[in-house]
Length: 216
Image (cartoon, rainbow, N blue to C red; front, side, top):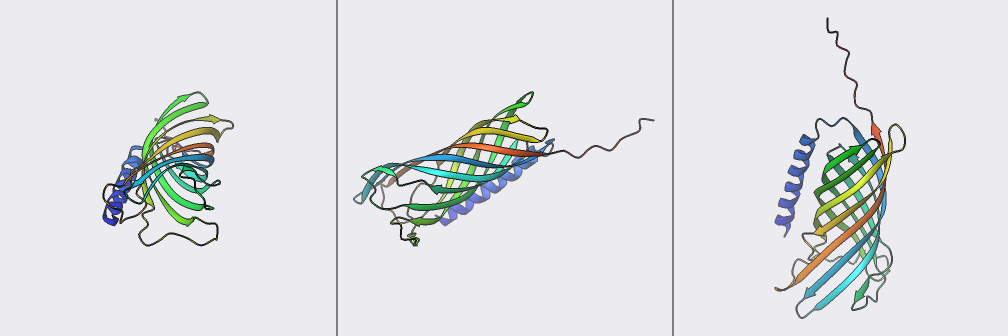
């Protein structure tokens, strides 16, 4: 399991470098902040142990660097309330997750409006899992709560000032490694999809001006 995570991280790193290469000629660098709502849908089945189907609301905060065709993002996620699930969750859940992602973007500029779509990959790790509200981290040594995601996204940016943009975004995150424990019995199945709706505010840095060249 650890070897698979390491290989996946290496692949994400290579993908990031390739994307940055594609964006090497970008005319602007933009940095921004994001705030949004997330909804995760989870289905777990462990033979002879448990079956779970539920949804959980999240608050998602983050920042990003945008290179026109590539966006690098950092994210902080915490849950909002307890899951709605079958069977019913009876604890008091507190979770904290942090992660990063790289998105290959396809922008379309229409005057002061930019529409974009994208595809990419992300990594999310759970640093706090408190299932009964006592403030103690309930992660155990067999927990497999470092997840890799395939991302599909689209959004819009409106230029509201010379170098300031604001706009909404939507991301569909499909969990490629949804198993919760590394020692689960054969036949266990897990599926998780995470939807994220965000509002983003960005500041564009002016590109360096080209030196004047005398044609004579």
